Length: 231
Image 1 (cartoon, one colour):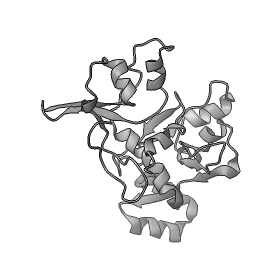
Image 2 (cartoon, rainbow, N blue to C red):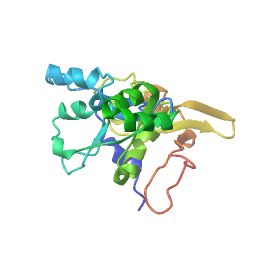
Image 3 (cartoon, rainbow, N blue to C red):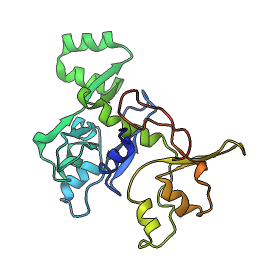
């Protein structure tokens, strides 16, 4: 049985504290969804360190938590963002860092002749720092990239919060878009799930127009890119 990866991704989201961030700009153009804010009742000092980053390596190095039955895998902008969500330090894994220098020979010469402190100062000013996720979590992190590729508008549902359609729209993530091949119609906007289509449009949208977003949908065997037919 195919396992729907978007449904697995649903319990990893925390409303209001995650954003799509490009941590490797300008080396890469892709964003990744990560926790960038603390809960409202978090300690103010750690909240500032999480949300107001500077060039300090600790504040700009993403971390990922080891998933458990109680806490699903999530990406945090830095260790402070993870700690304010009550994660333990020993459950966190920092992303690997790498400096890309336009003149690596000069950087190497400074390291050998002038010491580590001046070398660090040189690469901080003249080289580009980038990060890569832990290798053993690559497949689990992929949905965090895919969801940021979608031109998805949230909170489009105008119904009352007590309405079942509103609740269904806000419950799970299974991105879809509208397309009618016969009428040559394609909607560039994507929706969080099929219920959000009816919630934000109207209930007269034909089911055949609702298409799965063209991203990896499942993990079994040959991962399928794109969706055919109605959701």
